[in-house]
Image 1 (cartoon, helix red, strand yellow):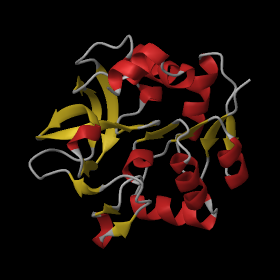
Image 2 (cartoon, helix red, strand yellow):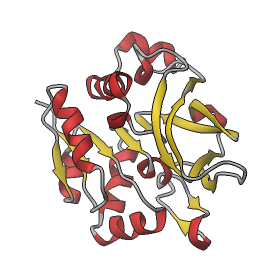
Image 3 (cartoon, helix red, strand yellow):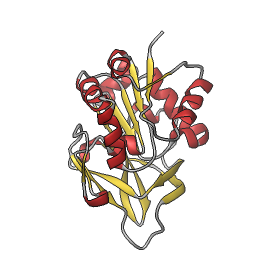
Length: 212
């Protein structure tokens, strides 16, 4: 059986991710051990909160290095909400915060004129085909809670966009890495399907088509 690791760095909402994946029939390991992350077949980095405190926790537990090493090995990785944002180089919140630097780009504050945090259901437009959206209709609704959003340098990695005052990136993919700004574990059947797609992986046919 594959080892599925959910990274626990002390943030909230971790258990709900574990429960959602358990509902699908998988048995994930909730862990804060860097060695577990490196040995895992698939890794999920969920979370809520601020980039600075998340990075401080990851560094204290030496999970930052483990995540970078794991992703660089080309193994399947899913980041959720703040777990997506810290994959980028820099977050503008609280005067600025350096992040993991795995993906080129930065994290910006949602513009004024809209209530923040952006909280509730919103549509995700699928920008390009990807196995993570298998069986999910374009424009389906997912659940968001955030005040900042990722702004990738490379538009080619954007696979989903959402409108809230501006049109922002809500899902990215590069190689075996996928990340979403929304919370699949709070997004009903579409969210469960997204988790299942990640955990079951892409077929060879889908991989050849999507990465051609």
